[in-house]
Length: 294
Image (cartoon, rainbow, N blue to C red; front, side, top):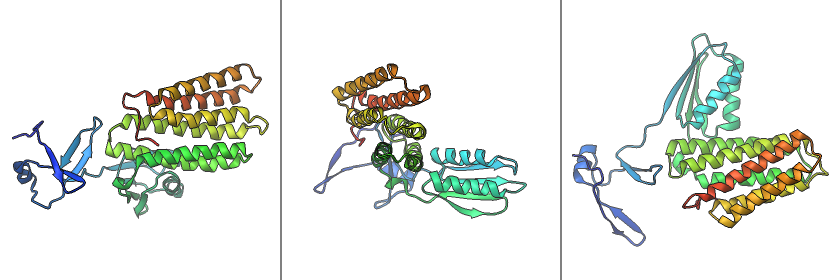
């Protein structure tokens, strides 16, 4: 018998909790008994799914050769990380090169928090996730990305362009961790979080490029961008007036660029950063607003 759409009521349990009764036949079928643990996950639509076992950890194997470029292998490691793979084996029948091994190690250390090499031989590397995804707070990851990008603005306005590259590496780590979390949990508002993470990562990438060409006597544009960036997070919470203000700031920045003699590449980076900031704010147009986002 299927229990699809069977109505159940929640009732008060203790002083601050509520409880839900599940059918006994489902308990028997699942091999559960009183005091057994169950696992609850949230779907994209916001529905809760009760399972007798925890979602199985994804495992994958990547077969390569000694001629596979270390740069390709590093990128594949990163993609498997973001896709939510919990255990990854890299295997080469003709052996792994030192450059490939170092590429894997560097990728994990730089951008894949939680991934660790748990086994290694001349022909294979086994990588496993040793973190508990339930302990990750996605809103805190978004907040950390916001703080890091604000730090990039501060360093450039303070005249320290070299620090931006180091900060951008931290942005990449938090971006990949956030993307991994969303892929594993498939939480409500997953598409919104994906979009916000993408925009923030793009902003940081372009800030690093802008830092190379930034002139200390041209702080006006950067100050405007920072103001737009700060306002975008207020807009993100569903404040319609702030969404409009972010769009107006973008138009003002673009008008100023069109009348300046700024180098074309430099102007393009400023324009693209402003566009991405506007992209963050526009997630506030969602019916509910992204109220959980910092």
